Image (tube, rainbow, N blue to C red):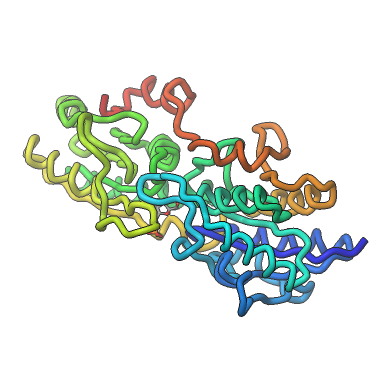
Length: 360
Ligand code: F6P
């Protein structure tokens, strides 16, 4: 039976969103269904609706194109996470207006491509009776219920490349270089890129650090004749006994903006060791540009799976990577809590085995 489905991208952009849009629309077309893109996040479902058709000829060149052709939003009335990840319940009237908006557009099921915030909204919509499925997107890789999210591999590739570049200048100048990476309250980008890029110190939110430990690593390296040190600091890393470092004052109904820990660590290293130290904030470079091959493939698989879930009537679920295959989990389970770096996991273990300082 023919169906009309909607696709919406929400939260921060990330490499691979367009590849998911392409895959969803193609898999829908294969079944003879119509796909409609919602412009500017969930807001596009409300009158005056803002949408665009996603027909076969609209999908060329999307597999490797960065950003999202639909636009996205991580602010405004559709905000389900505020401050340091506190859940906000959307007003009933807003959910009802969204349901009616979808009905007016003739959309029978919505594919929400998003991270923790957008999928928390999706869960609230599901509870309100809106037919919806989720696709796990975020460079942070912090969604529960899936082994990996798309966008993460592209962000790690960017951060690893940055470390390679910082290494040559650190070596040439005998400096310590601190790279601050994104990831919010999870250290996935930092620990993957740190291990892949051969960092000497990796600071993640899951392990509060001490400057004594960081400086001892630098001193030990100097002792061994290594005159440079590469440090990766997740934006959510914090000193033992301290708190998160934020880049801006808290805004109403928005998540806290983390940032500044890299500069702080660099200043402290220089003060305590006398070693010339510089810091770099990698920032939104991690979210821009084309997805990696791994992400393109993952997005294509995730998009097709979302359409399969709708066809099977498995609504209120998120596509998930099990580690060995592709499955789905209830949206409620995916948004119940963040998936952070396990202290018993292989990355932390490997870092310790290699003598990488984790700040503890
Ligand atoms: O969740 C993705 C992410 O890039 C985080 O890593 C980062 O903390 C945040 O979004 C930045 O958000 P914004 O683009 O609003 O500054």
